Image (cartoon, rainbow, N blue to C red):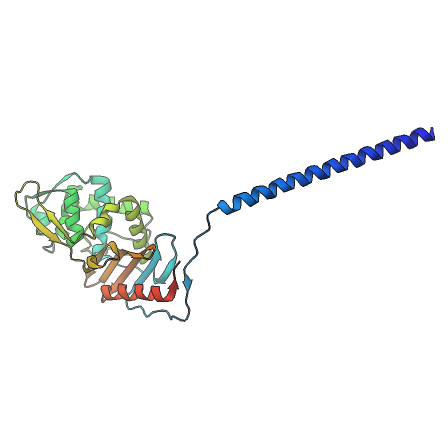
Length: 302
């Protein structure tokens, strides 16, 4: 009996040892496969782009404007931020939002009549005449390139009147996420139209992504225009002096006694595109060039 028990114990021990050996080899094989899978997959993963490196030997600049924002549109890297949530009069930056509403809700091929009431709007930019008819596309180019208040007023009238059109602008502003923007007209003549640098960058990004033609039109130096119901044509010349800058990719200026000089623009910056918002400047052209020069000195951009 004792011999049988011993033999059973020995057999059991052998079986247990064999089972442990099998488990060991199986586990080792599985771990080896996992490591092998990781080794082959890692090299194929794309590396994250490196953020620009700040050179702290270059001091922060003095900012003469009321608000300033410079940000990479490729990855959202903030090069410089100054009072980006401070409300400021939009002036003709309003026309960027107007252009979005016209493009998306009226249509670029729609025929827009010019009324006497539109022509009587403050300013003569665009040289529009009562009775003329333009496609919305051509009238938008006039509005953006020479900042025509008459063109903006014509869109208001066609869109059901000022109140109805402004309601469309407000709705679109909410959809875009412009929580710090207030609009009361399509032209920007109303100084109660206010925004922030942060909101203007949101609008600029939206236009680039959803309605890129708007930005493309703003960098045209000249444009031949002709009313649909007229045999005569004329040349419209862009009033934005930035159009001669090879790095300028488009944008809009806005000016009024209360707002000062505003700018919302896109520039080529090495392999990146940067958005620049300036509100309340005394010399936006000089300031934007000074700030972009500072960014080049203060950051090593990959």
